[in-house]
Image (cartoon, rainbow, N blue to C red; front, side):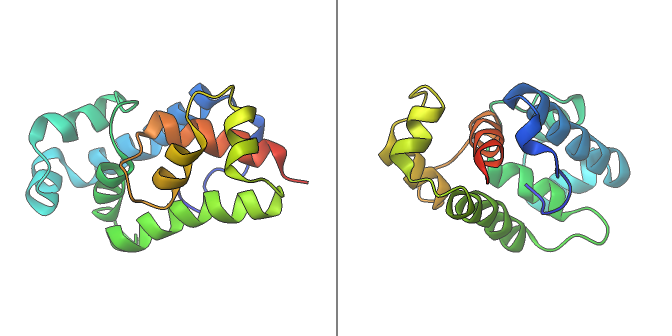
Length: 142
């Protein structure tokens, strides 16, 4: 999700990568506080608490970047969202991969059109889906 924070993403399983995202998000919640994040982002307290507890697989990338943006020295949520999408798109370019080969590489857990729409931000992407794509793309880079 953040450039440079997960340099070994391609060496981690999607579950390991999701746990790494969870650590960064939980640290943000611990630093900023549940109430302040809820007030700043408009997310409900239950959602913010899920980030604090590491229960993030079904949480969306939009929610995650909203939480991260509250952290000290972090860009705003729109910039973080663009960066997260860019990581996947540029990774696909570097790995010389299209959405069909990406779908095949993740055993068709997501359809090619669905992958494209999620990466482009036209449909919500869960953090579990993001970790799955991020892990595979980084693992395929040459």
